[in-house]
Length: 233
Image: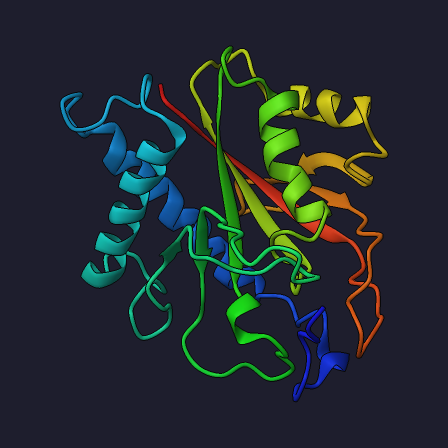
């Protein structure tokens, strides 16, 4: 297996976390972009029926419109790079080189203490939530697990799950129940609880039991997952 850290300071893994203020900016961007999608005509996008990829594609377009239009304070091309959608990245051990997180927000410029710049950013995985896409078998088993297992955001200590909520019977409380059913699988250290204001997210905390390969053999430590649920109605 190739050494992912060759020529780099592997001791800097995991990277310093993204500042709280940038997470709050991204939250506002996602809410604003979601509002734009809700106003699209059904002939363009019917969120109640659209696939995950169709929704995320339109959400990505709306995000970039906001960035270039500089409609939200702190979200400009001078501060944030172009938001990537499903860009190919490797897993922590290089076992896969085709991991595709739904969205990654990256800050412009160089960042001290960053060993892998392509792995530095605000990683987001998006999942629909409704009767056809249950929280346990979809949101958790195909979303949360990717951060716990080192597929996504393995150089970071925080990341985000976004839920496209198409049935309001599904609540954050039910997410807690789904995680509680299999605490070991998701290495859950803290069940979802409300983030401090002005954030509108919830947060859970998960251990990561694997280690970075070769040069460092360090543990990445836990990851904090923010949960931002966007409702259709």
